[in-house]
Length: 245
Picture 1 (cartoon, rainbow, N blue to C red):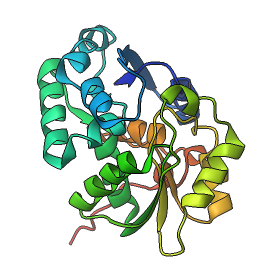
Picture 2: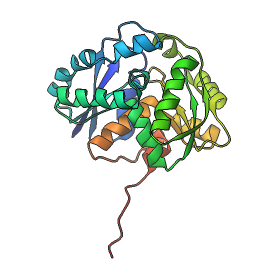
Picture 3: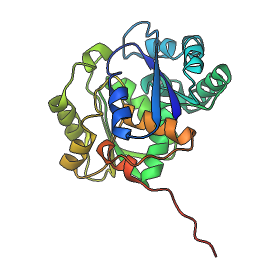
Picture 4: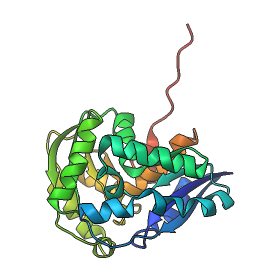
């Protein structure tokens, strides 16, 4: 049994995690602890406070008691707003506080894009465009070309959490671009775990969503790979086998 830890801000789409655990169909357990969201606002100052070291550190003891081997800060906007260097420092401090390997959803997206071998991506964000622009900058710092970015102007995670498949599909379609090798939906408040495969069928390309890549990142930190096609192309990639010569 491998236990993976997640610090999830507030309550919006946390039910994606037990769904993903079921879809993994393996000896993987997802342990989730809610952090204090503070002000529910997709606004830079509120997001910086939500992702502060003290707020994240408050949840790590519970994850240790759950037997977690890795921890991921399950928030995209509350990590990328710190910028590339600041997000690294956020994860470093989280790892020190938790005593285990750590990452965040923003880095999960960067690593997942590389895993897929995609060079160009489109962003379909629920956030206001000024916040979404910070995600564009973060990905560019990771060496990823963003060919299109669409913000939706949604201020609160609570509102995002009410969206169903039709709204999520409309968002993905609106944010897609012909040159994009993948479409990224970067909000952990958005329910997507049940929709990824259908979204990929509709768009004809890989779709990376926040809770999906967050779990994949935790598996990566634990050096685990699980083949789970219901969770999209990201979960159907096999480990590279080095030929002996």
